[in-house]
Image 1 (cartoon, rainbow, N blue to C red):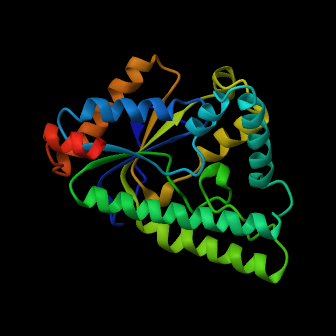
Image 2: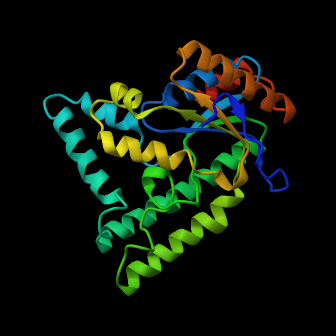
Length: 260
């Protein structure tokens, strides 16, 4: 992957959401830190908000780990069960799990619609992760059930409906810019030693192939010193904000009211 460069194969003829910037990448690339810092810096010039468009945040897992006595054990157990359910190499999920997955996808669609409304209001929106319809698997922010691995009429129906949700509905919500953070498996594993090495390798390989429906993608090497990563990301996102005529920063009273 060639990093620190905008892709030249995006499709400018397709509609996108002005003022919506997505940050994607494998675990260990620093998505959460970067999106939070982008909002912190950009808020000085434009009204900017961060939204999470994954399903279960790594931040949630970190909070569980801090629970007294059982936190670390519980987080590992939940992560193991979630990984098994999401793995596309395993057999299809049980009906109850497929129903939960479908519910998660509906929830993601709802969150994406709210993000569009926020961006349409003039706010610069920075999203941590972004759904895609090209490759099946919640690992990759695609459909979770998998039409290719389920059996039984009801599960096949759910899988087909979920796939249509991603391919027909979520494809309409393209960001104006998508920042893809690159990393190698050794660096990712050194930053996330509690993750499965082969799972990280697989996710890095798959996510580098996704084109996000022809979205304009900025490839950024997350192995650089973090200050450089942030500086380059701020530069491209500021250009997006300026070109889409975002609102200025919120008045202090209004911002305080929203935070409350």
